[in-house]
Length: 175
Length: 317
Image (tube, rainbow over all chains, first blue to last red; front, side, top):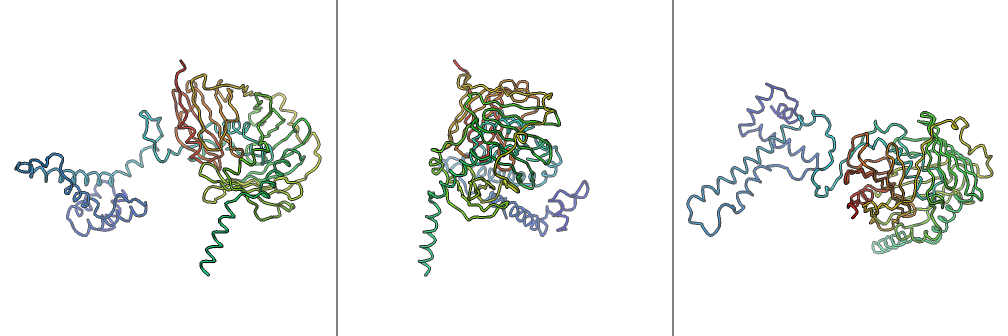
C-alpha cells in the first residue's frame, strides 16, 4: 500500500487506481502515516519550511488557541458562543486540510497544462522577491549590439565585448 | 598560537580589503595599452558551456585607430570600429548594422582620473603572475564591494600591458565569462586586416541614426540610483522595427547598463516581462505606459532590475 500511496502523491495513478489508496487514507492508520512522512520528505527536499509533519493538526491547534473574533471577550455568558467557538476552528482546519489535499492532488494537472506564460501584471505587484525568469528577448542581439556601442571601452581590447551575442539561438534558449 | 593565527587572518583580511597603488598602476598600464598598441591575435570567449573563437586586429593611429573582430564559430559576423563608427557585418542576412556616435566625441572610454573612483566600488589588488599565449603576465583583481556589480580578474603582458585574459566573476566567485588570447602578435598590422569584405558594399544597411535626446522631455523618468553608476549617454535611435527607441546608458567605469524604451505599438513579438540571463549579461523587461522597457547590462540581475523598476512615465504638461 505504501508504494501506492507514493504513486498517488506523485500523481502516477490514473482513474480507478486511486480508489484503494484513497480508501486506505481515510482510515487513520499506517497509510495516513506514510502519506504524512512522504510529504515531510518532499517538503524537506524542496526546502519548504511551511509544510511539515502534522502541519494540518498544528494549524488546527493554533486556530483553536486563537481568540475567536466572532466572540467578543466581554460576553462570556452567551451560551451560543461556545458552540461557535468550536465550530469556527473546526471549519478552518477542514478548509486547511482541504487546501493541503487540493495542493497535493493537483500538481500533475498544472504540470500538464502548457507552460505558463508570464503576463504583464494588470495590478501593480507588491515588489515580488524573485522576478519571473523568461527566455531572452527575441531582439537580444540587437539590444546587445546597441548596448556595446555605448559601453565604456576601457580594459578589454576594444571590439572584444561584441562577441557577446546569442548567435541566432535566441529563441531556442531556455530562461 | 590560535590568537596569532587569528591576528594573521585579520591582517590578511585587512590587506585584502585595500586597493594598492601597484594594482592601480597596472590597471592604468592595461588601459594605456588598449589605446596605443597595434596587434593581431586570436582569442576564445567562454560563457557557460559555450566557447567561441574570434580573430581580432587593431591598428593604433592618431585618428583613434581601427579595429576588426571576426567571429570564427557559429553564425559568421564581423565588426569593424573606427573612432566614432561601428559596423556589424552579417553575411547570412547580407546586412550591415551601423552605429554612429551621436555627439562626435567618439565612443566613451574610461578616463584615467576615474581609476581612483573605481577603488570606491572595487577593491583593486595585484594577483599572481601567469604565462598566457607565450606572454609572461601580471594580474590584477577587481573585487566588487557590493552586490551591484561583478568582480573581475585581468591578466596583462608584463612588458606592454596588453590584456591577455579577462574573467568576470559573480559574488560566489564563479566564472561567468572569460576572454583568453590563444595567440597574439603585438606590432604593426597591415591595413587590409581591418577592412571589411568587399562584397559587403552591396549589402542592406541598417543605420541606428542615434541622436542625442532628453527622454525627460517626453515624460520619462529614468534614474540609475546605483552608487557609482553615472549616465554616459542618452539618445534616440532606431532598433529593429522601432523607429524611435530611447536609450540611456549608465556605467561605473567598468560595467555598463543600457535602458531601452520603445513604444509597444508595432512591436511584433509578445512581451515577456521578467528577467533573462546570458552569462554576465542580465536583461530585465517590463511594460510601462504602453512602452516596452528593456534594461540590458553586464551587471548582476539586481542592478538591471533596480534600474528597470525606477523607470516612470508622466504625461508632460
